[in-house]
Image (cartoon, rainbow, N blue to C red; front, top):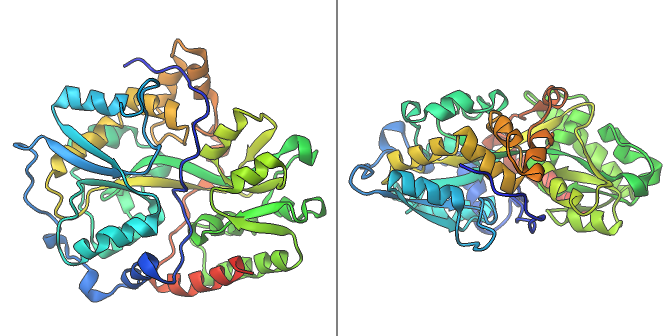
Length: 400
């Protein structure tokens, strides 16, 4: 299908990798379940329900705001999703109801731990939260025979995270990089390493991400740690370093997605950042750079999952596979501007008649080049037994 012309920078979406607070509310429920409460675990044989897909051509999909293409003249129209409905006859109830991983976990976890339907056939969560769902047995294994596009086109870098080998229960929706953003003109020099954040000319002008899951991997990589197999000692060493930098005034504050405001205003010159945000910032200020440090950076995903007892599993599998067609993935990538999990979409974009759209094919923050790919890794997730201890220490540092 034809690709839409490139539009102006879109408003920032709420953080898709947000702060984990181990205290209170939905996060407390998440910590409880993450610790492996026996009653919460669902055995493999108890996860599937009656699939009504053959006779009931519909499904319900929960996603984040601003995370799918919309028509320029009508934000209620979603071109790729509308095309799926027309070609398959499947009606999709698309609900933008996920604003925070822990909040949504708290919303649907009572049903899942009590072996009840959630009312949703497809959900999108950050991979660190997907790991919790997989450990608890709250999602169904997908039938890859119904997903030939996923099997063929899924980026090799994303195919087998530690929490879901072979991606049997999760499929990346969009991906991204946690790296360093900085204002080249205001700073007056390049940033190449994590250690550059601790330079004297950046004192009080640096921010780090507040979320434990968002922040730790990049900082460990700066210490030369292989984050595919990091240890508790590695974690505590980086906490010692960050605590020292907080106390000597190097770090201005810890942020969610609001780091973008500090970078735009010039209050901050360098910060931990997400690749997708920086593409939007560069539309207004080309002096803002994004760097994958020499030591490497974390490649992460927000992934699609089919919850237990979903009534339209086959329909959901068809929808997932539809978005792995290179031409569909290209149309989506041209709108959301995150790292595309379908490398074959790059050639589709390059062939676009629209110059701005074709230029996206050469953007390494959407299609990382070979040099960048060599430095990207998926960090091993924080296990349920580690999470409470680590979150407690990290939250103390963030609150200093």
